[in-house]
Figure 1 (cartoon, rainbow over the protein chains, first blue to last red):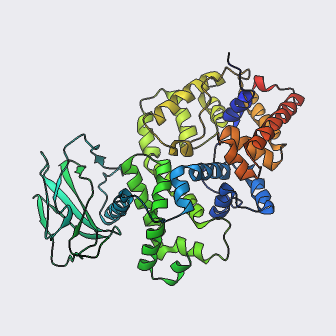
Figure 2: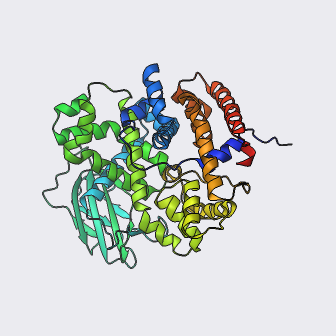
Length: 223
Length: 255
């Protein structure tokens, strides 16, 4: 037999009658430092009382505090908050995070392919269409003078990008071939990790991307 | 952070990203699951933090004292940028295109609640005043739920609850009040009853019930020792609200 929650009437009333959260802050709204401190519970008694005095009547600040508190309770976030940039990460992070940083700079450096209305470009969902497979360099290699990948059916253009481990774009090019020669200006240091990826244009504003692949030149210091 | 003030922009950025990129990613991934979304938001975060020679970071570092840990402040900043990014992407043009196929009433509700961010009651009042004088609150809620279902269809992640007001409960009964005056008046009564609580109690009630935050987190925020103390506070506050409303001649069940 189920018992109704005595809070149900109040929950219903609040959900229906509650004010909508304003998007824009007012002059009285708390700054990010205070919102963060309230969410992590680090404010002193007096400061907390003052902050709650505002939060109680401000749906915007209350929703932000709730949101940040929820994020801080997320195990993935909590781990990083406790030890930002901590050592001893699994290898996945050593590859995936520099790769992500690299992808960021890729996004920043290249013009966004948007239509006149500003809509985001179509992106092929992973696995829905063929993607370029990166053939070389992959892993530890003796040298890397060219980037090679497989062709994609229907692709008329490829976009290849090389990143260093901090996500800086070292080289990028667009071409119709499945091979790109690295210019002499791109100097790869032995032992350092590099990442690269290729996108294939398979239609109007439709690009099919490979995963990011890491490689390094043999002969450098042990990583 | 102190190193940021001494280093040049490039070196400072490298230092910052080296230390905090995992945290930034973790915070973004808390709100968004889609890989492309995560990468796009990360790009937006980096772009914003790098702007004006790391102006935002330097301004933070220059503050004489900080109330929160730097990493928690950063999670807050990333949260804002993530929500802004989703609002921009899923903004007026995008969702308006979805709403074009809807019945006129649902479209009006959509415009008030999802575009103009009016409360549900305010949206109801305005729609009735504009062109639907016979619209009952129950009919309004039914269309409101349909709009929520359509807008959130296929979306995932915690960002959903950041973008719009909480949807009405599914089991919403037909309220006794059907005129705009009744609804507005009762909404005002609820607001007055909530306002009669002290700030700590009201915040605890709203965080626990409206934001559905776990008791332990509410305790952390309002400075109570544990979740049990929050439950006690909230139930006591509920009793106070009931009393206040009954004094005004309204039972919670009637609202």
